[in-house]
Image 1: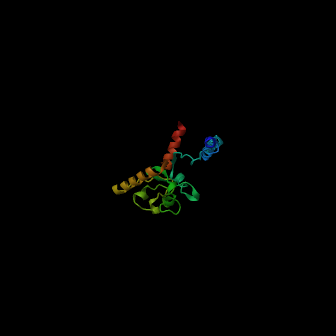
Image 2: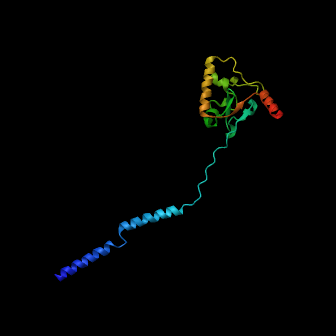
Image 3: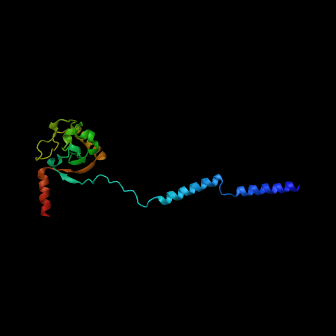
Length: 180
């Protein structure tokens, strides 16, 4: 019986030492997770990524028919056009309003009459760039309603970047500003 008792004590000692060793699989996994967490926490740099710059801010300014004309989208430039005195930046709709688009003849121009009449003809555009603005005289209630619908669409979709005034009104504004 001494042999059996001695053997039981030996086996009990083996189980206790093997249970207390550090190199069991679960300890290895936990140690790996801890090491990865510490490494990823302290290896990050304290610098933040630079914020990408957006497009330059749009400045509200006064345009005349002649100063609006260069904003026709050629050479990848911005596309502006006016509707009832409001100048819209429609550059996001380059496929429609840019060169080759169905509304391209309105780019850089006052599109009010053409939009109200649902016409893309060039005779809808004001020819005298230094003369008075189109007063939209002769348009009926249905044309004015159509124009208002277009204007509301543009106001919800595009930025207003200025106002369109005649050359005479622009000159009068400049004289008044200089007198102040």
